[in-house]
Length: 183
Image (cartoon, rainbow, N blue to C red):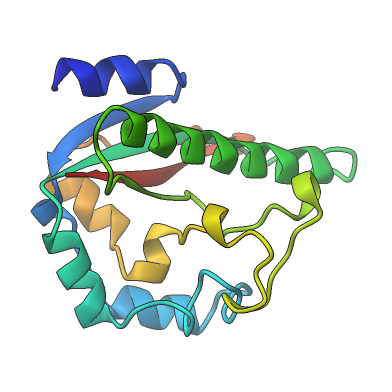
């Protein structure tokens, strides 16, 4: 990995990451359909139908040379005492990902672009929730998740020899993945 890339991302203490060619990101219509039918976030500001078409998403990824796949450990403990803490952890991780993008921008990568590991939602941190890009009160911080752009994360991980880590049954944790595009 480019030493500069490694030095920047290392500061953020993510669970794991790997540099891959951006053209090895798998974009699939079936992911978009599953995102559109079966996800409670459909229609929010960074989700379908408020995102580019699959063809436009493919073109977007093809304009980049490098991508960093970032693995993030998520606590899924759903007892009532932890639900708000878990949502805040997810939101804070998205804030951390945005800070990572800004670090790459400052390092001379003006088109660095991060995908949050979950839908764009900062409602617990900064009293923010939008129902469309037009009504978003924090447009500069809004980022989509990979699935909203049709990314087949499972196939992308396999294609790039990234271990798909299975956690123990009944674990309180699981992994989500983010993508940082760099050119």
